[in-house]
Image (tube, rainbow over all chains, first blue to last red; front, side):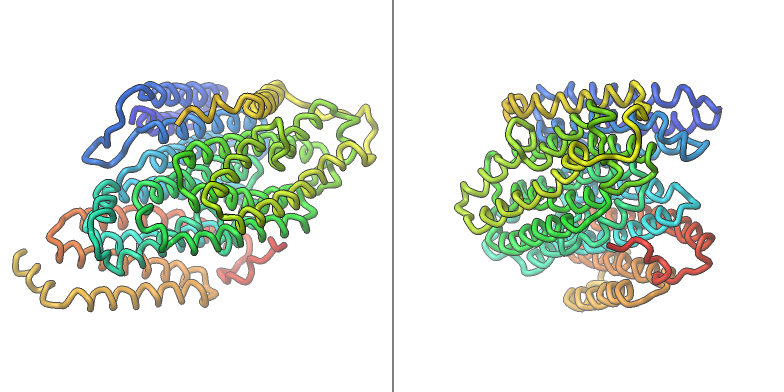
Length: 461
Length: 109
């Protein structure tokens, strides 16, 4: 709880710093505050997990591990923000404050033990993001993305709430352990409960951007400022998955024969649509949006076949996906600053001009594609292993075909960087500041380290 | 208060469920078919209020206050959401001079 309170105070403090024009202090204060929050959440690691505050939140290892991941990724993203926000607007305190508030909601979603906290967490996370997506007030694409995100977010919240209500009507409680007792003990589960499960499934699939509820994702990711897209596709997506997984693993396992076929179809559609549409893209940013849909499909594997290893496989996948995405979007910011374009062509000949940047981006792309010796491979391997344990051969075959398709469009960038000639002279270099070097370096090293020594992550939960 | 509870229990629970489902469905249909952004937001509010009513009904029938507390959470957060949503709509209106959802189709694959 210390972490969540720290973030709340930090957000308000940042607004005051903005009010008193202390621009230089914004980034250091945010980073220090986030590190304090990280310390608070890690300090609970060895304690016994009990549900606190009348069963509202629980800080078990699952919640702590994901909270730590979310905070670390946010720190990396904020380090990238140093020059980025200043180039957009004069009032930059709001960016930091809103990102911190959104992170606070994400931590609440990771640790909820009562539907009230799930709802409050998702709303805190999303409402801050609606503003962040539309923060370029005069940019038409940003406006459109904000409006679409807002309408779809509010619409899906309606479904989520109706589902929660029906489950409450059947079980008479919002508490996860109470719901588990209801599902385990009662022989005749009310039909209201099943309807509630389906509606909650719809609402949560909207939030994570799984097909057929994915149609807002590419537009919103494309229209938002790149750094906000990074935040959305890593922190927010992972947090939604953490909430999704906690609900289904704690409560819904005894009724799994009811929802597994539905979720299986959703997973297959998500994988195929994400991958096949990503093939057709000419813009790198939009390709990343579609690829994030297909990654949502892979993460759904853990929920389709819930087993003892599911929690750690979803953690491994999330770690790999987050770090690789941070690198990819960070590189895109640098390239776009130079060429002014987000198309694949703007990466042409990057290896000649910036060999290190090209190398780091290659590592990220290989990790996203799931090539061995990167973290992405371990993540995909564990997901496939889960599914194989349940003898779900059909899903496995579709997943492998999709993984092969994904290699094509990820390597598209790599081919452009190494084998195509750019327009600029080799001497025409990109200005890369220290913070970018540090963030991209750390993320690339971690991607490879976790790929070679995956036990560091796997043993955690 | 006792009187109110007995009055509310005078209506069978099934009627509440059917009534709220109909209101919710009207809200969903409104979001899907209307073109005016303001009306879409009103439809979303209709969805949320159907949920509120159903929660209150369940809560009375079970004699459990937590459902009514949840209604307060929904009201508070729906108000915050509407505030942000209206701000976004005004921002869009300044740029496009329109609140028609069709005017927002620049981002297409």
